[in-house]
Length: 293
Image 1 (cartoon, rainbow, N blue to C red):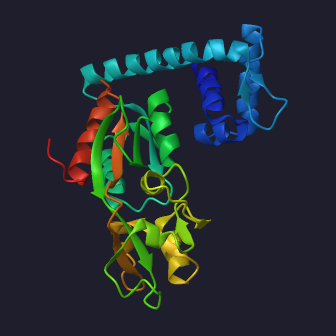
Image 2 (image 1 turned 135 degrees about the vertical axis):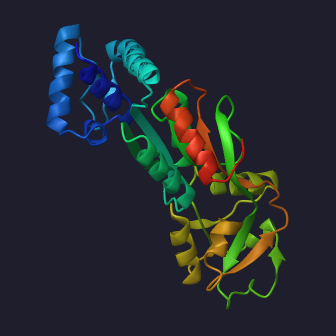
């Protein structure tokens, strides 16, 4: 049994796809499949049900998963222990960011960390905020930049942005001549918003539900720029955070939502860890986002 086989096994289990797992570990799909087959022969049981399009764990696979993760974690810890006594920071970090991320301090932090510690391999993945937070919980991700309606429980967090929602419309829209509006007034129009699972959408849906409103979200886009672009073309009223709308002030008018009081958050999320590479990356992130301490 080899560590790389366990790594591929964990990747397929977490991605639920041999194709995505192959992309994650940077080898061919046939290479991943061959190594998993060898592991299954050695263990004497199939680890995945391959009868459907999604790779799902068998009972044997579920029993093996946590042990595989523990073995990989132990191997990583051994490498880090040697690195600490020799003054080197090595290993691998997997960082997640919300789809359509344009928060440049994250990229600055990653670049500065890479220059300081070239021995650490960095993987960067995009996904929805809910999946990113879950990835940190399960250990699939070391660090994530995610949107949220509230700080995730049981995880370490650093709030990067906290701001209220706004409605954004083109200058010729009926709402454009006023500085603010309400959720009830907004729900009279077709809306374009980010999809469920994002911080902005969660805050918006909860605010509407608290008032018994059922908004007509007729269009969805993962990237804030795409939401703004659709609104600017008159397709629907955009629901964005204040800073997202500010980027498009040349073609959209932002209106305060008086009764959407809960802010949308953008947070860095990680588990408490003694990993020296993570400690160094967090230090770079704090500097990049200009957060003391």
